[in-house]
Length: 150
Picture 1 (spheres, one colour):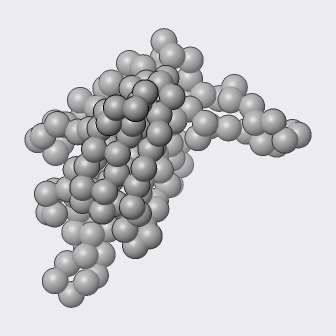
Picture 2 (cartoon, helix red, strand yellow):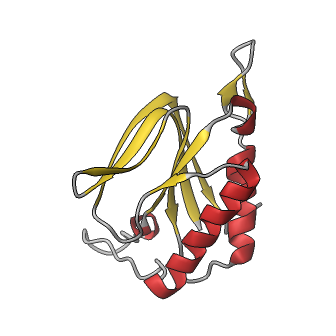
Picture 3 (cartoon, helix red, strand yellow):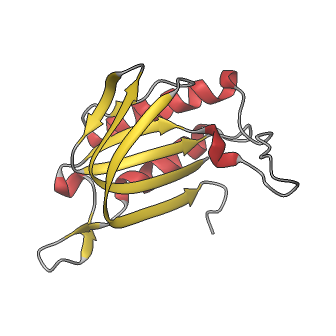
């Protein structure tokens, strides 16, 4: 499971002209699920996301986590994070999980993050054609792969 986490001042996702999810201060998280992922990946990665200390403290040091700043999450599924470009110029998505595996894990991540933050998170719709807008704050962008824990 791969997450691209962007610290944002604002972010939104629009589907068919309608804003489906929107946040102010917090994280835009792009989540890619592979066929090898499990509940263990959801929990490990979810804890990492919520615990990331990338918000400024009173000394303007990146020292505060999402809960400390009452931040929100906009979670977007993105199978293209598992693209392989080793051969040619057309990406292969063979490592990305099929919907029957990816959707339940995406939904488990939603529930896990909501439980950790003790509030609802915003999200897109799995498999939809989404337009994502964001104002990256910093910029701060962190990539975490649950298969690279060491």
